[in-house]
Length: 223
Image (cartoon, rainbow, N blue to C red; front, side, top):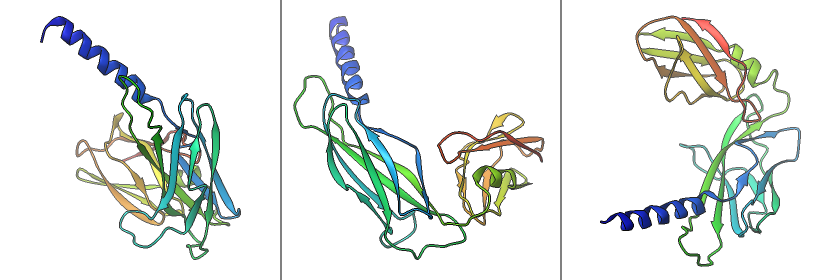
C-alpha cells in the first residue's frame, strides 16, 4: 500500500468515525422512580440533523425471569433532528418490596435514518441504564447509606456490607490511593467482595454515584 492509499484510507476512517459519534443524547445515566409518584420521566435529545427511530423497554435484572412491571410511553417514535422528547416510565404492578429498592434496566435503541450517505457508518445503538424503583417511606438516602458501609479485609479480598435499603453503585474505591478494579455495586441488605491489589491494610476511600449520576463526597476508613 503506497502513501496515497494510506492517506485515503485514513481519511475515510476518520470521516466514518465522526459520522458514527453523532446520535441521541439521553438525559441521565440512571433513573430513580419515586414510589410516591405515578410515573417518572427521562429526556431524549437529538442534536444531529437526521432523524432517529427510538425504541424503549424495561428489562428485569440479570438472573430474574418474568416481565418487568413497567411500561414506557411512547414505546417507539421518530425523533427528528434538533428535537427533544420525553420517555414516561409507569409502574404497572404494586407488588414490589416496600422496604428496599428494586433494580431494573431501561433499554433505549436509537436507529438512524436509512438515507444513504457517502463515507458514513449507520449503526443502531442500544443503551442500557439502571432503573431504581424506590418505594415510599425509605429513611435516609444513598449518600447517607454510603457513609454507613462496613468494610472487612481478608487477605487480598475486601468485603463490603450494606445495611441500608438502597443500591449503592461505586464511583471508585481506593486503598492507599490505588484504585480497585471492577467495584460495581452492592445491593440493599447485602454484601459483596472486592479484590485488593495487595494483602495489606491502610487508608481506604470510596465514592458512590448519587441519584443524579454524579459522585458523592469522598468517604474514608482505615483497614
